[in-house]
Length: 95
Image (cartoon, rainbow, N blue to C red; front, side):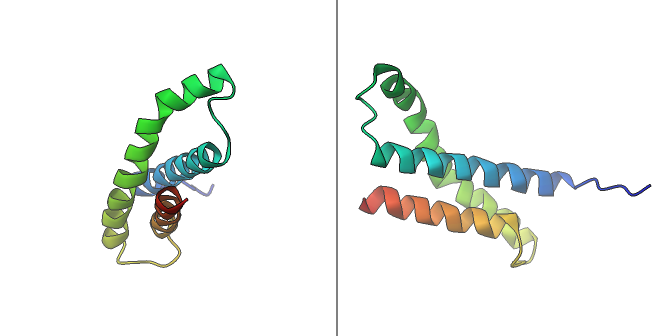
């Protein structure tokens, strides 16, 4: 029987990738939609904006450290996490 268990570091890399993808989608959505037009949506935005910004600015450094530990492997979730985070940060700043 084949064991397809992944290492804890790979699991963490995938979680970081999913976290930054969710934060990016949230940032894009909030920049493109008037979040205060509907009260519950505005309340959700008010609860999630600070954790989203924290994720956008902290997660890339964690992914960079993991990517460094992988010796800069090109097909890595960490590289894609950094690229997505950089795109989202630039979008948030310049939009």
